[in-house]
Length: 278
Image 1 (spheres, rainbow, N blue to C red):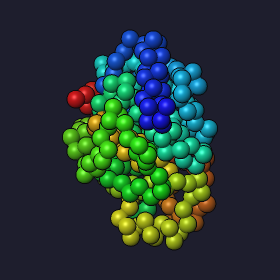
Image 2: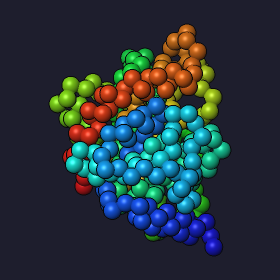
Image 3: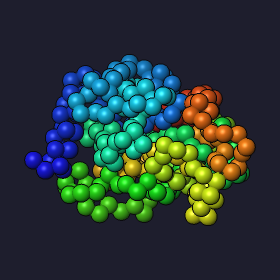
């Protein structure tokens, strides 16, 4: 059996297993990044399924990623939420990193919100700010679509002219303005990690037009767009990137900043989800 057929079979098997655990069939999904998993506790009537119980699902190994699929209602909106993700730097392949998002698409999600913790390349951004991602630079050296294409998953050459959906992004802006939640906009550079960037690399990223840098999200966006899923994304600025601050970077700092942003996300995300369905 070739690799694409195997992926289709794995997705079908995992979807059937999840459908046996919940009656909800959400069309809105989310991925919660480092330190942001507490938002899932707002979901009502939730069924929480550890990744290791889902057939074929990769489990994250990084602190701040609980590793659970949560299905239930956020306000009145049925949602499916990935509480944590896998990363290339854990030794996962690009296809493995994208498996969770592909499963959400296979489960029926058509509008997806990705969240992450990011460093500020743009010195005008401050730790603790929320930034809506408007575009990205995939500098990971990987792509989840590499290899033979299975038309059941998406077309061979998907268009990436609008990786982040304009309507979903405008909806985030409108909800933030209505709620009084500060929301900036920026371009995200995705790198493989796990080491943080050098000052020279940050200068390079600034020259390329990046405002933010992180180690996730871009491969998930590619996989989601391949599947025809519309995407919006939010970064929590957790630190100034190398060369912009004298303070050494650490994952503990990332988790603290993520926890500090949860209250604003708990107001913004449910409002967005209520209007994000196709």
